[in-house]
Length: 359
Picture 1 (cartoon, rainbow, N blue to C red):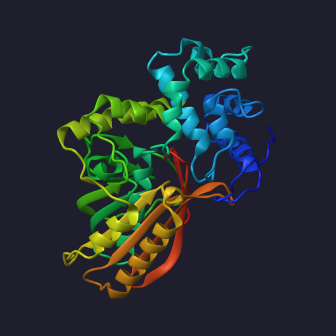
Picture 2: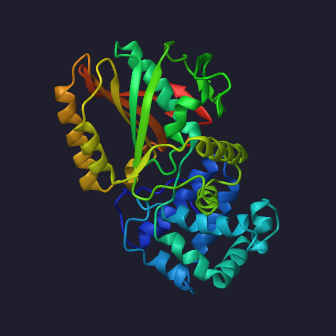
Picture 3: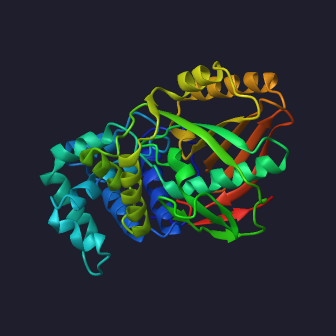
């Protein structure tokens, strides 16, 4: 495959877009310290040359936009699930990153033998819940407090998946030396901090609520396994975090409703807001999965609510999303009144391993 990203738009469709999506995903995985996942995706891409199974044919003739649909990760998630369940032992050398093996032949054989189990993985987008991303949310809240907003936040999240980031008040963060959260949190995060540390403020999370079109129950082992299948196997700390999140959810489940993003945001913005508290919308690596009409509705609802916001009842919007032009994840904030223009606060590793603070 080419060692340079192929230019493509999020909504591109067709056979060429499918191949470009797989090629770019390989490079993206390599750039994010996931060589094994890159090998799996590259092996899956070889199935497109002469698709001999229904699984391969569905991928090759994908009717949607393969980049927006995260098609390569849907397929890779299915293979990882087989590996985690011990159902396809021949994958073990690939996941061990062994040399001198034919990845393409191994993956093709697994697909032939386990096609019935793999096909459903193409039916929905990957669940990319990652607790490490919440460090970006917390850093942005510190920045918002520095701008003069109340240091109390009522958090709303779209695309919550299993609600791991909705439990951020239970975690401890070391953000370039700035300490936030309980010392003995359910999880602790110390991302590599690049640049100046964020502002130091005491902030409070007054409550959290999220939505997802297909919420995941962390206390259900089968659903938890599905989430684990989307974790890149190289990132062992993410498996440890998942176990910690499962334990935290067993103590108190996060508040998630089954709704689409637009309906949820419109409904929550219509509710009364407590004085002295920031109403905050947050999301990470989910905007690309929100249909364009819903993106427009969310934006319109936030801007309309922002026009009504006051110093006593402010509104803020924190987004950690992929900029596919420069191939990085950007932390962008808007707030009302006074900060409705998007502000780039920093850039981040896809799973929170590092944060480059720009403010």
